[in-house]
Image (cartoon, rainbow, N blue to C red; front, side, top):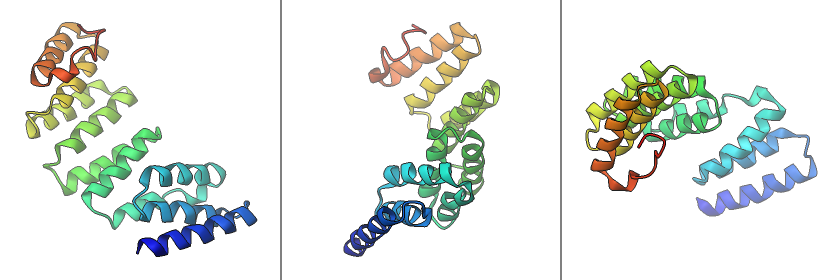
Length: 178
């Protein structure tokens, strides 16, 4: 219950303040934030703990392994946002194996592959995402970016225009392509 989380958080924060070198207390603070649904704050605190002692690395994997597909996706995108590209890709692969119809997982894996510089594989993932989510202009936008990064500017411009036609809120987002 939420009241118990708040009480636990207060106690762990006090303990962490008294014994700051004891990372276990700080890890518990992150865990309580995670359990309260404050995932972004938990991610930041967790990353701080890992930076001081990498033996705590992998806890997010453990938590996500007992969570839903949506929670696994959140963890994967968290890895992506932290620059943990390989871990993000591994997590997206697991999601795709367990939920092959989850278009957002293909799109996000494509983003991760593009960050790694593997543009052809990135485009393939995004094409699969588009197949599953044909009305998602964001996927088309990502596809345009990848084609631009590949030097395929004309194709990028066509795909970008399609994205804008699907959702005019994207107009002006990629001025370098227009």
